[in-house]
Amino acid sequence: MAASVLAVVGPTASGKSALAVSVAHRIGPSAEVVGTDSMQVYRGMDIGTATPTAAEQDGVPHHMIDVWEPVHAVSVAEFQAAARAAIDAVLAESGVPIVVGGSGLYVSAVLDDLRFPGTDPVVRARLESELSAVGPGELHRRLAGVDPDAAAAILPSNGRRIVRALEVIELTGEPFVARLPDPQEVYGTVRIGLHVPRDELDARIARRVDAMWEQGFVEEVRALAEGDLATTPTASRALGYQQVLALLAGELTEAEARQGTIDGTRRFARRQQRWFRRDPRIHWVDYDSPTLVDDALAAWEAGTAQ
Image 1: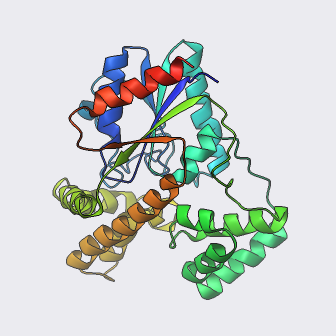
Image 2 (image 1 turned 135 degrees about the vertical axis):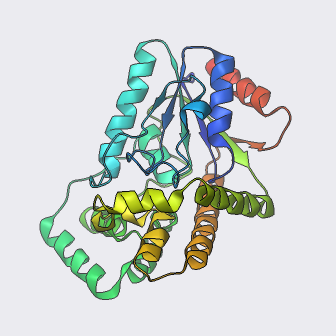
């Protein structure tokens, strides 16, 4: 099918948001950005999630940021429905949705025919009991043994999502995540991936975390903690937020929280890269190419001409 959606994917700190805005300006006023970041949807979690500021959005409409309060545990299925509604609204106005995301699970949930079954209270309660007994790390190792794709997409600290993945596998007898490389697209999509060499990506992540601290990240988390962030099952497990909550609780020093955020983000970036590298539909371009925007537009124009 001819392309109707442009997607920009890649690891954290690779420059996805900036590229999406640049391409949107070249396409024209019909282009709008639809985020697929599982944490940018939470209000007030801006610094730690690198939510684009008004200046960075540069007049381009953005969807799926600051949608829910952190106390609301957003499921992948709920996120999927909201993001697809945003894409459909842009398409209904003959616009161009530019989907931006670093989480392979959320990108696939929005753009591919990924379906999520209901829940079973008995199975869920048993898995949650196991989570309390052995911790998320042990359950994540179990998940990696039965569905490596799901394990690659879920942080080892995110007990809620690990439990959900194991629940789905038990209920359906099938992997939680649709297997690549043969997914079924919901929209005709051109996918642009940003390639960043590992050493450079590590350096960019460190610089981003340093900038987060300088912008007042600790104060952001402190304010959110006063609104019960620490008790939320999802938002409190976000990279950086988990470490700063531990800092505020006296469990880590500031240096340990900062380095823990860098290390955790680097590990997450490795998983992001492995996920996207398995998808043959992605057109890879170097993050620092002088023709980056032109290359993305050329791929988009070729996709729409099919």
